[in-house]
Length: 103
Ligand SMILES: [Zn+2]
Image: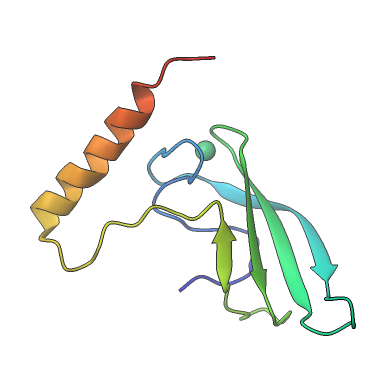
C-alpha cells in the first residue's frame, strides 16, 4: 500500500526498472467525471534515474490518502514465491530490460 505523498517508494521504477529509485513529486492535478463526481486527486512523479513519469491517484486528498492505482503499473513479483527465486526473477527482469537495443 502506498500513500499520495512527496515520494513514491517503489522497489523498482516502472519505466527503467532501476532498483530502489528516487521517484519524487513534480505536480498535482484534480479530475472529475462529466457530472462533477468521481473526483480523483493525481500526483505526477518523476524517476531521478530515467526521467520517466509515474502517475498515481487517490479519491482522497489528505496526507494519508491511499493510492488506488499507479501508471505505468509497477512490476511485482508475487509474495508467495520463495525469496531466492523472487530475487532471481527480479534480476532476470532487470537483465531483460537492459538487453533491449537503444532506439
Ligand atoms: Zn526510472
